[in-house]
Amino acid sequence: MMNKIYEKALECKEFADKRIKSCRHIYRTNNTEQTYVQGDIKGYENLLYELRTLIKDKYPLIERQLAEKMSIYDSNRFYYQGIIESIIESIISLEIQTQISENKPLCSIFNTRKFFISHSSSDRTIVNGFIKEILKIGCGFKDNDIFCTLDPTSIRTGDDFREKIVENMRGCDYILLFISENYNLSDVCKNEMGAAWALENKRTLPFVLPNTKFEQMGFLNVVKQGASLLVGSKLDEFYKEVCEFYNIEMDWFSFNKAKEDFIESVKKIAISDIHSKE
Image (tube, rainbow, N blue to C red; front, side, top):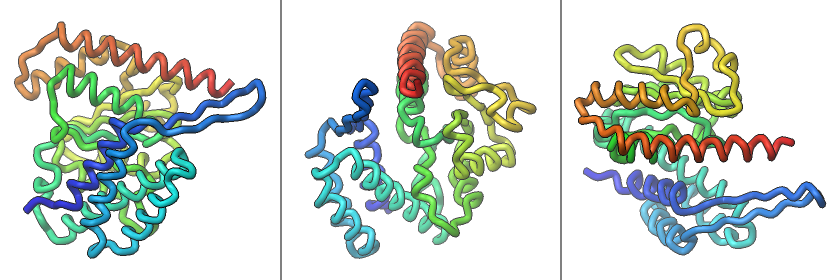
């Protein structure tokens, strides 16, 4: 049976990732900042109302919390957007845990996902770019081939991190780690990293984000050289490997175009991050 709550919560999450943009500009000349949220706000709110209808009986407290944040959303969209996204991801996490505790087949949630993406939510712009340009456009994979880890705020105190992470990883062939300073500061990410290396028959590939030194990979630097996202030859190696593994006919023209677009976008983000820290 279709898990309606999970599907609707995931739809809300993907809608926010793709069609809602939170922006923050800092003006150093007068030490002020401007924040705003743009995108299809009305469409997002409609999805949230649908989700509230589905969860009101099963998760009444969460439904009331979501309703409260929606009622004051317009007063500070930048602030409440993050809170609402955390609530949505908490619902996703709860539904996954319910599925596991009831011993239902994980494939009913994860379908046939091939890639487990481990990353910090602070790096979602780059990771979403990798998913779009490299995995989807470049390699031809679909949404149900990819599982992205949840935001760390959705993991509650007392939860068994390792159990949750391993269950999510077991249905995938590849585990991709996106290493950054943000990643190393996250306990959830570090648990994912440890679980990835403990699993057998999984191909674990660490990618290093810009402005991150290889030694920041910790123990990974000893056993596995990370691939920089700005090095085209490393992305070529990845493309060749997955095409051979899944018997995909290689289209280097399309992949190279997607790769160039991705690298260019990552360079812009890297430069912006450097300027923001000056």
